[in-house]
Length: 112
Length: 115
Image (cartoon, rainbow over the protein chains, first blue to last red):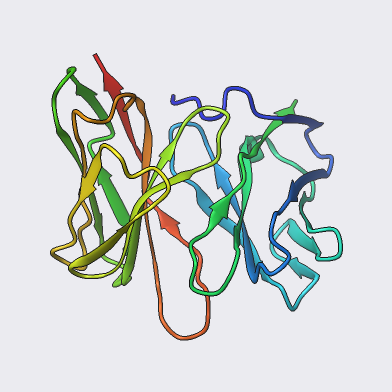
């Protein structure tokens, strides 16, 4: 399959453990944030989003935390499974009406 | 099912040749985008279109061209002027309008290789 991000930061976790993937964003005025998951050879898939008026949002097995003070976004995956292995990247919209800015991504590797 | 379809999945281009990548969506989204993805880098915006018959250059438009004659379609042409075209190309679409930002729906990508 296609290799995306040959030199990305890598996070390795044991199956069943929790994973935390971090992202520093650039613009304090950013209004909307999304986490995407990209498996090898495929397009990015939406995981979860959060708007700037929130600091936490939960989905199924995933939680996104937003710390506007330090411009930091994190994705927590509970009970990590082999199918979670992928590249994860965050995206921000710097200002309303502008296009998303994407981070380079982190490769998550789930160990058996 | 609604979605966004890119074709072909793999494309080979000879030096000096133009090639066109297809992107079609049936999500009724107004906005469409083309991104280039290289190893170790984030997605870089090539072109985008907020409405039919209108499009704007992104950050790396040189050597590329697009058209938006129909709402559903946003083909990307990689011209011979693009000196390093080997990459993974992603098309995306999104709703637009109002005062709410929306996320992007991505296609499955086209891998272009110069031979």
